[in-house]
Length: 129
Image (tube, rainbow, N blue to C red; front, top):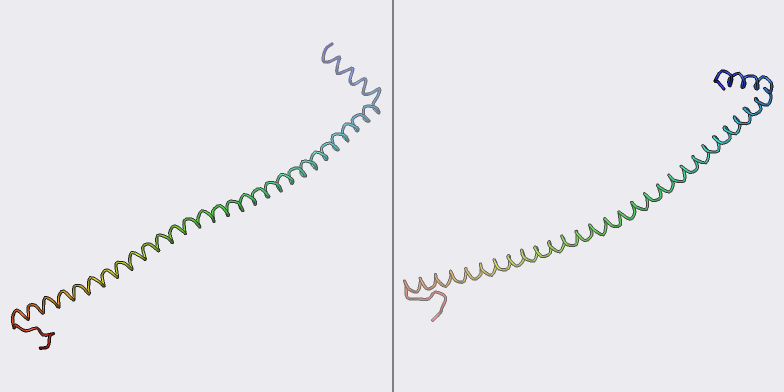
């Protein structure tokens, strides 16, 4: 059977049964339309559900990340505060040592001055006879 004869057979069938052919086309068109609408509706609903789930997961992930970050940075801040406290203690110790050394140096200087004075004059200025 050639293409020309096949085409002729389809045209003859359509002319003889055009009402049935139109009814089949109408049913096929309606079925395709209903299927397309249902698919679009269910796809939109499914898409919205997926987007809602994604939004909820992102919110949960953000919340968990913020808790994790706050714990992490609280530890860093605590270590820095500890370092600052130790450095403050060192500074206080240096100030105390400097004050002690200053007092010691002044006392030593006075002693040397007194010895020099005694060596020159033969008298101690701070002692009463």
